[in-house]
Image (cartoon, rainbow, N blue to C red; front, side, top):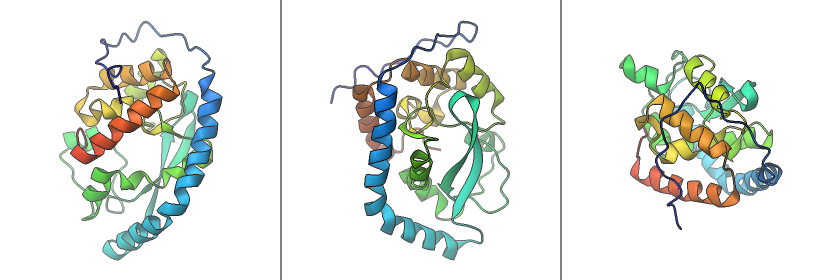
Amino acid sequence: MNTDQLTEPQQAHPDSPQPVIENPYASTKLALDYLFAVFLLIPFLPIFSLVTLLIRLESRGPAIYRQRRVGQWGRLFTIYKFRTMKTGTPTLSTEEMQRQQQKPFTRLGPLLRKTNLDELPQLFNILKGEMSFIGPRPALPSQTDVNALRAQLGADAARPGITGLAQVMGRDDLATPIKVKYDADYCHSMSLKHDLQILWRTIGAILTGRGNK
């Protein structure tokens, strides 16, 4: 598949917000998200059960982790993930934990994060219309710099995704302005072809672990 369109962005300019253009693909994308989420839930049920059991056997606390995130147009919603950290871990972004040199993961946690299996419960977020398969990763409310820059660049116009353009182009290896610029670029060029390219690149990113810290 040709991925030449997934190129390095120019430096973000927060003072020059991009106009949000109504994309006719958005309604089709919503329907496709719902259909594929239903289609994937059945074969993934055994994996759900196995991961849930392993988490509960390894550490105390619920298998599903619930956290408030910032979604489309800045609206808050509750995201679902398999728990990869010990119960009681402060709510911090990955970048902030790295700066504080914190590694509060369970023994199973790094494997779940590396393979992205921890994201599987977000299929229910998709069914609720809160998320998409492809879109900007939902930020924490405390990540005020990310959320403000997304609003300025129009990157909050799309529903947040399980994976996205910023994830396949570097993920945690990228500086915040570059990641948000990728998010904005995606929002202004959404298409089925673009989504398929990102999905293809996501498989490669998972296999190599690129940018996943």
